[in-house]
Image (cartoon, rainbow, N blue to C red):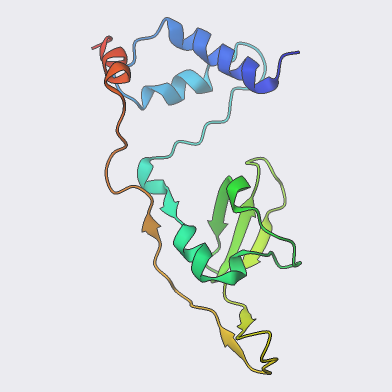
Length: 153
């Protein structure tokens, strides 16, 4: 049984086989045009500076643990996070890129100080924390991969 991902990977590998890449960006066109029949693959071109380090924000803010319906958010499954400037503090999370309805997480909602206290007051969670880039330098690649990529130059 062949899975869709295996078929896609195979299709891209066949298309790439006879092309020399001079720039990393050229891979987008090869992937997009790899399919001979049917719709072309949808490719989102992103760079390394598009990735942010959310782990600290999640650890410091319990609001990231559940969505607006109280369901647990699985951070390891998140594929896409977006925010609407019209709704500060509300994040739209998707587990799959093609999910039509995102999960909404309100990072600004109030949380109880301590359950044991049964305090009536609630404290607003930390707001307006700056996002930190996930990588502060280009990702290293192995010498073998570098040589392989350099063959076409």
